[in-house]
Image 1 (cartoon, rainbow over the protein chains, first blue to last red):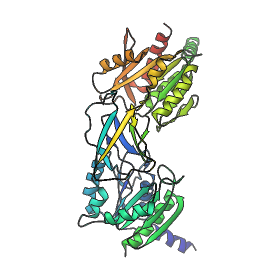
Image 2 (image 1 turned 180 degrees about the horizontal axis):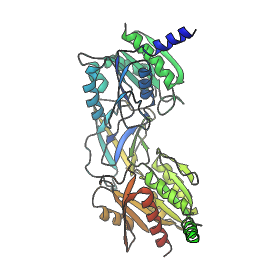
Image 3 (image 1 turned 135 degrees about the vertical axis):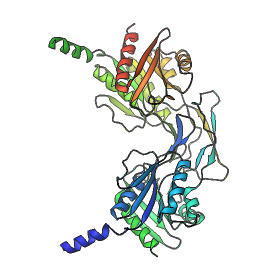
Image 4 (image 1 turned 90 degrees about the vertical axis):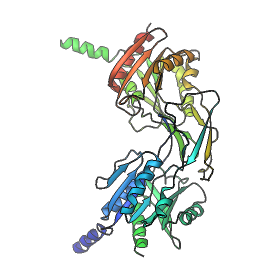
Length: 228
Length: 228
């Protein structure tokens, strides 16, 4: 029994040994002027939980993180960024060194076309903010050569499976983990989550659980698919 | 000596006894859709420091706070809000019960004209966000009758004194505290600050110091002017 538990512990702690994982987490902030920005409700908790679980399973982890209020695992190599452009730059330069890329960050799709040097003053006419598309970090890495095994996330509020599978194919991903952030208690800034993971041919359901548990199960699926 | 120190302590702890202060703090978040929002870099630290200092000086404090990551003083009556409209509603209903209103929150001047029910999907054409003006909490309270003694803040990146004095007059304030958030180490999300406080006829400089110290000095100026 003791031997078995030691063995389990040893196996659990080394399942991902020798693998280098690149994980993005948190939101990005897109400046409008020196004080204003656009962002989203990502807390970074899911990405950080994946980083923790990967480290516990023996992987080497590089964590590229947007501005969050949680502490990064000390064993991870952490790169703090703010905007989507900064995250894109960091991820593109890190990707070739890694076996698996898990894009968990909620990267802003758009940024203001121009960033004012000084605080924009109020005027009576309202304000029109013209936004342009940010580069697609996940698609750019998935379409690079050589490329790591690529895992995306799809946080949706409707037609979750439909959008997730579309993203998997369009971006040339290996796996996509979909979650319905409109459901109470899961998704952004919560401690629990539930995911449906799609490969091009398979579907895996991870039931509602703590983000730590969900992270472990997700890594098992990723590892299994990576070894195929 | 002991008697004097006790006396000082007693006086320090009761300078604002009997006064009710209403303080707003932190940023607001203006939703674009269920996941995206516009916000600003306010940390809430200055407003919370003023609340702490006011409580220590014996005042009753109501703190209306936007989303921040610091803990509100337990003795304050705290009202948590998210958007500028929510803060406006809370402040307008609280103001008549208070002697002094200190508007320290960085309220979003604009909000998106429409809030999408579901996450806005990416398309190739970029995104144009039409923004409309939020109500002006400080001006609305300063122009109500009866009105509390009104103290505004002006966080600027240029022509600080010019903009601050304009705001004082335009909004019919009693005092305005101006800070240059473009200066390193002061303003948004820092632990220190420096302020220039303007009444209609006077100017007071509060030198660079911890936000706790700056809060104490600011309350002294407010108290002095309130008693005039």
